[in-house]
Length: 111
Length: 116
Image (cartoon, rainbow over the protein chains, first blue to last red):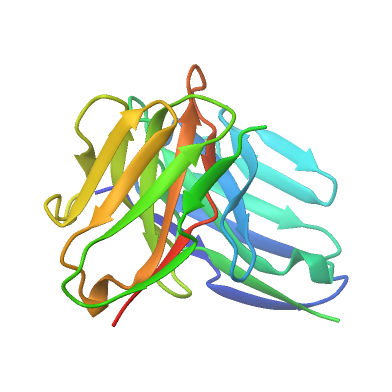
């Protein structure tokens, strides 16, 4: 079945450093979403990418969808302590509305 | 807008009993709702897709007789964990896709189930 892997599994950074998480799908995706989950909370939708090679920015966050639509990345510039949490990608394939979540990357930011 | 609620937020039950979890879309109509399960420090595992008025579609490995899903209206889906066992203890999260929307799904706050 479809698998979505993320690397790294964990990342500790000093406040102010950059952070990147990578998402790789075993199958071609129709679109991909990114979520942030704070400890004890539920996933919160960040963004959706649909087009091949698409790049979207939200303040310090940059999201990219690969040309082959099988991978994606989330880059955070100059991390802050408020960025702490687990970041999940979730991919959907054509013809379905269900999303398979990636394994997640847990980010800790040290002040 | 686009708020999804879940009830209860946490529940403790004894082994062998059944527990019902409700998922409601408060300000929109949800043609499709999804049920996920999340173990501590792990990812969300899709359990089933629920469409209003029809039978749920379960993911491989999920027992449909154990996890009963009912989507009786465009704003309510329920998940019943039957004959619960300690290994069913988990965080159950629902999400809803709004009528007419193709991609976005909105998550509920989750229900923490502990089976003793």
